[in-house]
Length: 329
Ligand SMILES: NC(=O)c1ccc[n+]([C@@H]2O[C@H](COP(=O)([O-])OP(=O)(O)OC[C@H]3O[C@@H](n4cnc5c(N)ncnc54)[C@H](OP(=O)(O)O)[C@@H]3O)[C@@H](O)[C@H]2O)c1
Image (cartoon, rainbow, N blue to C red):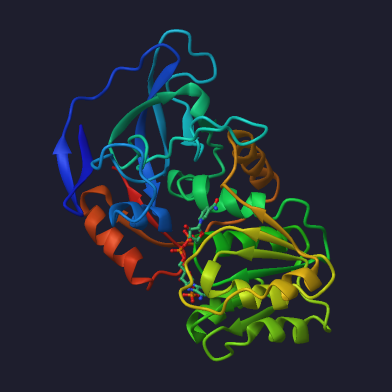
């Protein structure tokens, strides 16, 4: 089988034997994968890595079960599946030890992979492989970030990355009002098309936290899907107002930014909840919900498996608007 492993910062396509599923494992023929910010960090050697340096990259995949090991009961040959982001977090509280795809164990940029049957979720017929492959990291993160959001709540999303677009779509489908930020007019138009009620340009309006207050009659957002980190947190805190909003602490794509003022945090009464994608159960809940309330994942482009390098460079350029997907014909 063909499989990518990084060597000196480059993706190298290698030939390796197709693995045999052991007891409790299935063999997945990968049909599609998608890229996330973390995959770039790992390729650049800039992310917490617990395994050897040349692990197969990429955390998200969808495919077919093509063989099963002894004792497998959850899946059969022919089943369509996607992976849960965390192979060892089934449900409940976050386990003490997590082993990430690409930074602690081999990931999914391969034609075949054996995996515990417990680490997979059934892919419904309503979703293509490409759509299914967009879900494990970005969509599940958006889903858990929005936990408890009620109709009428104001949700603030930042930028047009994978997590933020899913957060916008899921928040709208839950009946929330969405304020979204971005850095270009073209992307602003897409956010409006996807249902954003208010769109702010965070470059033209660096004090966008105040603009969120203005857009919400001074109240601010109820839920903030905070993907910007150091570059955005101080403004997010202003956008939170003083009514005990919840900030889902997701990521750190933003650079620079002001230091967080303790008194601003104190006054806001905001709860800060760290997100770690979600469990298999969260993934199953999301997939079940999507069957009842279909939303179409925003896919920017689909690249052949053989051109993974081009897909990575396109994603790295941030010219994409939506998920960058690879198909494994
Ligand atoms: N904790 C978790 O469970 C978890 C899970 C998934 C992801 N993450 C983290 O969440 C972050 C987002 O991941 P992703 O995969 O969605 O990223 P992504 O798709 O690479 O997001 C790129 C987008 O970020 C936006 N951005 C950059 N700087 C910004 C700023 N100052 N303000 C607002 N938006 C800004 C840009 O949007 P515009 O082009 O519209 O300006 C850009 O297109 C990453 O830090 C990732 O590591 C964490």
